[in-house]
Amino acid sequence: MKLKIYTFLTLLFILTACLHAQDYKIRFAGSGAATTVETVKVENLTQGTEITMNGSDVLHLKGTVTGIETVHGNTTGKIIFYPNPMDDFTRMEFALPESGETLISLYDISGRKIARKQDFLSYGQHTYELHGIGEGICFVSINSGSFALNGRLISSGSNSGNAKIVYAGSGETGNLMVSQEKQSDSKGANAEIVMQYNDGERLKLTGIYDIYSTVITDVPRENKTITFNFIACTDGDGNNYSTVKIGDQVWMAENLKYLPSVVGPGTGSETAPYYYVYGYNGTNVAKAKANSNYQTYGVLYNWRAAMNGKPGSSANPSGVQGVCPTGWHLPSDAEWSELTDNLGGESIAGDKLKESGTVHWNSPNTGATNETGFTALPGGLRYLDGAFINVESIGYWWSATEFSIDNAWVRDMSYTHGDVDRGCGSKEYGLSVRCVRD
Image (cartoon, rainbow, N blue to C red; front, side, top):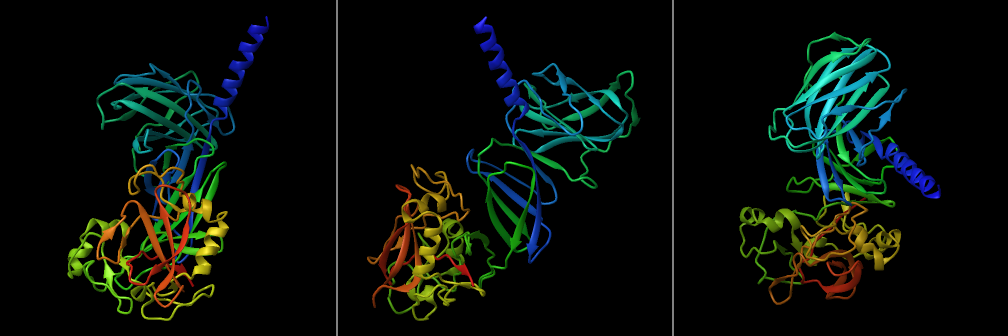
C-alpha cells in the first residue's frame, strides 16, 4: 500500500512539474537614441544556443516538456497529435473555448518558424493535418484571443522545407468560418519565436537599431518587456560598437578597432603612437583590416596611441578621451577597479566578464559565464621583443593611469582562471582598448 501511495505521489510530482514547465514571453522596446528595435540576437549562455529575430516579434521561452503539453489563457486543454512521433503526416486536434481569429504557428527546435496558418474558428473541436515536417522536434503554438495552447511534436520525416498546416474538419460544434489561408505573412499580429529554455539559464540579448547596438543579460522568470537603451558609440573609422551597462558604468562590449595607421610588431616606441593588428606585419591599413584577428579582437595600441598623446589620469572618470569615440573615454585604473569591485572583486570578476565557451578562448576557459555581457576576448599583445604573443589565451587592456614614467596600469584575463589581474605594463606594449561612456 505504501509503495502504491509513493508511486502515485511521484507521478503527481512529475505531472505538476510538467504542467508548470517554463513558458515565458519576452517583448522588446527601445529607449535613448531609438524607441524601436530592428533585430535582437538571443544567446542562451548556459546551453550555447542562439537565434536572431525581429525586434517586433515575441520571444517565447519554452521548457522541455515530455508527454504533457502546457496551456495558458482562460481555459485548460491540450493538443492531441496522432501519430506522435509522426513520419510525413499527422493529425492535430484541439478545442477552442470561444470563437475567434486563430493563429497556428509551427517552429523547429532552433525557434525558426517553418509554417503558419491563420483562420477564423468557431467554438469547439477542430482538426488540422500537418505535412512535410523534417526530422527532429518541433513546437506548435495556437493563439486565439486570450487563449493559447502549445504542443510538442516529434517527426522522423524526411520531407524538410515543405511544411504545411491544412484544416481537416471540426467536431459537433466547431466550424471553419473563414476558410482562406493567411500563411506566414507577419503583417498584423507579431510573430512568436520559440526558444528552448530552462529556469535559471542566462540569456545574452543584443538589441540593434541602425548603427546602435546594446547588450543586456537576463535570467527570465516571468513574462516581461526588455528595453534596450541605445547609445551612440562610433569611432573615427565609422565602426559602431555594442554597449553594455554594468553597475553605474556603460562600457563598450567589444574591443576598439580604430586603425588610422598600422605597423608590424618589429616597430615600437614608448613615446610615438603605434597601432598593430595581431598577425599582420606591414603598413597597409586595408590589408590589416582584412585580417581575421582584426575582425575578432580589434586593434592593439601602445600606450601613447591609446592616450592619443594626452597625459595620464588617475581620476574617476579619467577625463581622457584618448583614442576612444566622441562621448567616450579611456578608463582609469580606478574605473577598472570600480568595475571589478561591482562584480565581487578581482578574484571572481574575470569569469563574469569573459566570453563563455572556447570559440575564441583556448580550453578550458572553465567558469567563464559572461553574465555581464562584457564579452572579454583574448586579443594577446605586441611584446617588447617585436613579437605577437598569447592570442586566444590572454586579453590585456590599457588604463589611462601611469605607474611610472615607463609603465602604465593594465588589466588582463586568462583562459586558465577567473581572475582579473591588475599589474603594470611597459608603455611600448601593444594592448587592447575598451572605452567607458562619459
